[in-house]
Structure formats: C-alpha cells, structure tokens
Length: 386
Image (cartoon, rainbow, N blue to C red):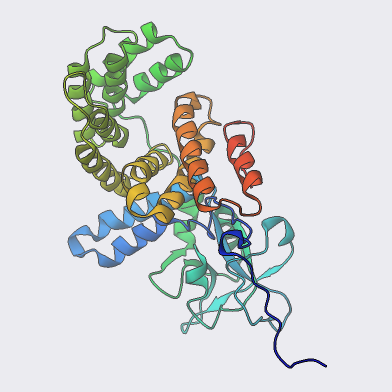
C-alpha cells in the first residue's frame, strides 16, 4: 500500500541540471535600448537651460537606434476582443517572421488621440495591467515608426508609455525617417578621402589628406592623423605628436579621440606603466560625450571599453549587456565599405562575450550553439547571430 509520503528525488548539487542558455544579443529582451532610455531620462531631469540640448540628444539617440536596427516590443491583438494570458509575453515575444498579419494593439488617450505603444524592454511592457499579459511581438523599430506614420487613424508613437516616456508625433517621425545628413564641415571631405585610401592600405597618400583635414580644424582628421603618427603610417612615428592631436580632437568633440586617450593611458609607455584608473576616467568622459551625440560609429566602441575597463570587474551582467550591444553595432559597422578598421574591435568584443558565456553558463544547454553563433559574427557576410 502507498505510504502517503511524497517520493522525493535527490540530485547532487554539482550535478544540478542547468536551464537552457538565453540568447546574449542586442535587443529588448536582453539589453533593451540603453541609449534611448538614457536620453529620455535625461530629458525628464533637464532644467529649462538644458532642455533643448537634451531634446536633440534624444533625437540623435533615436537615430542611433535606427542605425542599430533596434527591435522593440509591440503589443498585438490576437482577436477582436483582445486576448489576454495569465503570464507575461514580454520576455518570450513572438518573432517578427511569425507576427506578420497580426493586428497591433493601440492606446487611446483621454484627449481622444490614438497612439501606437512600443516598449524597449520587458519591464516597461509589464509595468501596467493594460499591457501585462497581452501578446508581444519583437519588431524592428523602423517598421513601427513607419506604421505609426502611414496609418491615418494613429496620431503618434509612444515609447514606454507607463513610465518615463517619449511621444513622437508624425512631424518627428518624418524627420527621423527622412532626414538628410548635414553638409560637410571644413575638413570632412579630406578626412573621408583619406579614410578611403587608408582602407586600401595607401597610407602615404592618406596621411597628407588627414593633415589637410586637421589643418582645417576637423576633429576626425586630427584623430586619424594622430593614429598615423602613433603607428608610423605614412609619417614618421611620433607618440607625443599623436597624443597632442588626440587631445585636440577630443576637445573638439571627437568621441573616438577620447577613447584613444584612454587606450594610451591603459597601455602606458616603455618608461611608465599603464594607468587603469586614468584610462577608466577617459572612457567615462567618452561616454558623456557620446550621450550628447549618439552614433553607431562611436557608441559600440564606448560600450566595449566600459565593459572591459569597469563593468567586467563590478557588474558582470551589465558587462554582458554592454558587450552584446558592442558586438551587434561593430558587426553592422563591419558591413560598411570602409568598415575594416572596426574588425579588431569586433574580434575583441566577441572574445570577451564568449568568455563571459563560458563562465556564466558552463554546462547549460545551448552554450556550444551560442559560441558558434558568436564566432560567426566575425564573418561579416552575416548580419545577425540569432
């Protein structure tokens, strides 16, 4: 006869079954969109004097999100009545390829406006009973902006409506989707020509163009000429000249020049050891500069430096998120015609994220597959590793 006692299975602690590994990739489920979230937060906190600058910083952050091919969580309506489950869909959203044809859930405001809500991370989607339990799809931000602009019944798109939110009316949507880049500033044309020659290894021809750009006060030209002096490419090697040019470019607002100053501090010289503290301060300064002028050519590099110089020792999960964003952005940059200069940065980011995955998910299901996908990121013919 049964004893009435529950049968308990015991498993040694060191043989505990590990849960399947979660994808370590840039997107709403793992990283969110920190550039946009931070820009919105700073806009809310800004005083009157800083509000206009913070507004334009938000616009640049949104443009960065488009450059990064960012995906967001969009509530969908599975039936005319609106089905709702007992659990959150936000952490396991419907993939974009399976969400085709699904009706998007919309939000009506007290003033009668109809807006399209999207969320940058699961916590934002689950912050209100209005969307908690609604099915969620993971869709490209650009697709959502275009949908809000094209639909006559919608007045705007709202990012993260339940907290610190940003409402984008149709005028802003048009500006984000169809804005043209600014005209060349003095020296930018020469820097661009030099960059194309440098990509082909023609440093003797590229260096004079960088010098001409630098003479016109272009920070990019100054930074690239500094790199030539630092490595002795097309000019004689002169580390002091390189440092002076990097400082000048950083003072002019060039984020990557500020990163280079941090790298120089970390590396040290033959006579002086590297200074990790000084390097970290330089990288934090680069972050502050990047927040005001967010761009895919700079932000992923800053993410990589902060992950390796700070977060890896203080917050490993934050380091993984920074590395995932860096890997994604650097991989996209490597697709560009002159993107070869970013390949060493991409290799460094992939190696660091792989190291984190091995340490954090040893024995977990899917680890080998994840590492293979990360390694495939070094093949620039593939845009995504998921």
